Length: 315
Image (cartoon, rainbow, N blue to C red):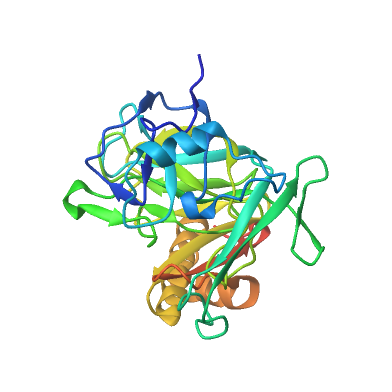
């Protein structure tokens, strides 16, 4: 039977990545898995009487699982049979669907891109209409839902210890890239035996930057095809969609994050096309876009998007 993994006290970890965490399931390369997620601690749940439904499994997890240093509740980790450090996981995102009929958006005091704008902070609960695929803002505006998982990552090396889920890294994690929706493929380095893939932090909608700290945080269901790529030797995550190849950079300094994403794209172009680094640099200047993935995860994110057509015509 294909793996269908629900969030339970035994199948989630809250707020951290850890290369020594035992897997909750093991799959073979090429298996398609269904993963369900939850988002939000006790303070994030909608109040009773507002017509929003909190799933029983959400309450069970909150009552039984000890929170870690970050806010994200991840389903997993899933081990891939035969995965070893130096390999990669190719995660094809076949489908992402809304699960809850509500989401929340949080401005935390002193956080976000403009920490002084709303010094008292605030949290709002937002109805999600599954049938129409929209999120309703407090003033009545309806935002089209475009669901994706903010957190998809392998485990870091065991020697790294327990890491907060807030900061993305070479293992992926809290990437918060809105391009990673249905149809995208994410390539993740393997740093420990089995790879140990975890998924969470569902977003019904998010803008590039995620500027106030959070998106429309909600529970999602995803169908993923997970393949093992032996000996890939990736330094960090990269992705592809029908239109683009995407490289990523994470750093406390936004300029350095941009340089990391750009260097990764130049390396990808030279490997794919045989172009020199100089010509790949020129290509990125005239055809690639650098976008701010997020400004709020301590290590900021930049992603570079290059149209697939730009990889043609070279040898």
